[in-house]
Length: 255
Image (cartoon, rainbow, N blue to C red; front, side):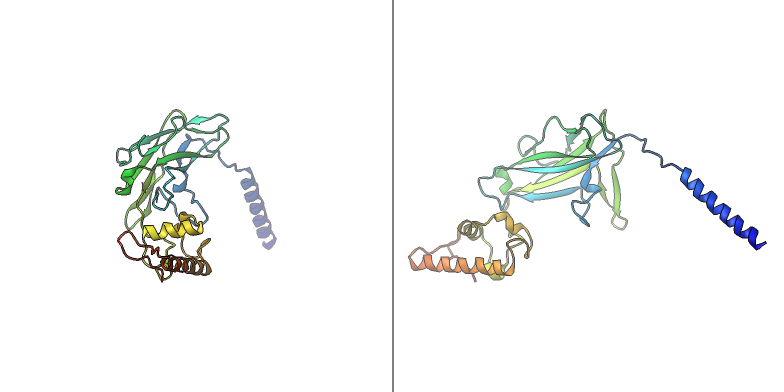
């Protein structure tokens, strides 16, 4: 009886393995859906999934009049051996004006052989960005090549917050605010004149200060060097009869 039981178990196990071997993974046979990549795949490992982001021209040199902002798109479905047209429209909720504040190519395609591609949005630096925030809200639309069945999902059941796969919001302005990498203990109160003077004298890229302390060029020794350099510079200028003042008339100061 024991031998029969063992043989039965062995037979059933072999039968199960044979059945598994015969099962085939069904290929994807639905329509080809297009979506914004960062709503599904983070930009970096363990990064957030987003359907909106933003930036500011505030730390850019005055000579910079535009920025190219890449927006990744993906297709759920087949990779094609020909270029496929992408339909992108501007949502009515946008406060930025197409042609005035931003532009994108009239002819956009998912290139042949690509599962992921990029839309390059050109954001134009305009005077009104000094006082106003603008948003460009972009929608992926269905066309003869792509559907948009992937639309949104709830990311927080308590708040009901959703993330969209086919709608992307880019916010931008030209307002100068205290950057993330500015440490008051080393540099004192933030002012635009102080900040850009420091960058100019030491040939520092203003955008470098958009990162948190500890990043490239923002270690403790870096901060100490920048601070001491500016203190010496201001002292030398004052000794030569050229005291440096802030826009409000106060003498420029580094701790």
